[in-house]
Length: 138
Image 1 (spheres, rainbow, N blue to C red):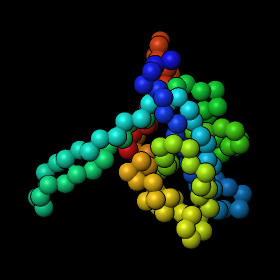
Image 2: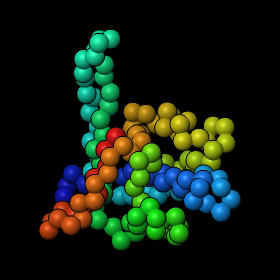
Image 3: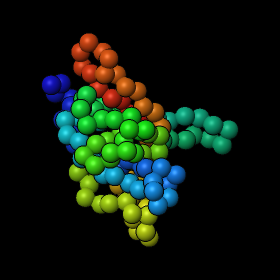
């Protein structure tokens, strides 16, 4: 195993309301070990001046628990997926996202920033001959 894969992350997968029997959004929490985590501040220039933002890269080793979103919604327990808008937190996070006041996705994200981000990019690199992994960006 690559020595850079030493971080634990907590992944919150969103199941869209349209994909649940009761038409309520659900969040499934999964803790993943032996991941790669990189966060850096990126500075840019805009018409309004200088702006800064954190840019994230996470790599997760290939895992038999991974399913595509379409399969995940059918059997989410003990499984995970990666979709835009899902939440990643550095470390093991015990909080649940319930949608109730104090426990919304946005509130959890803001509580753990800068060590948390929403997924904006995903690549399945498990077809590589070595170092098979999933890559997340945000």
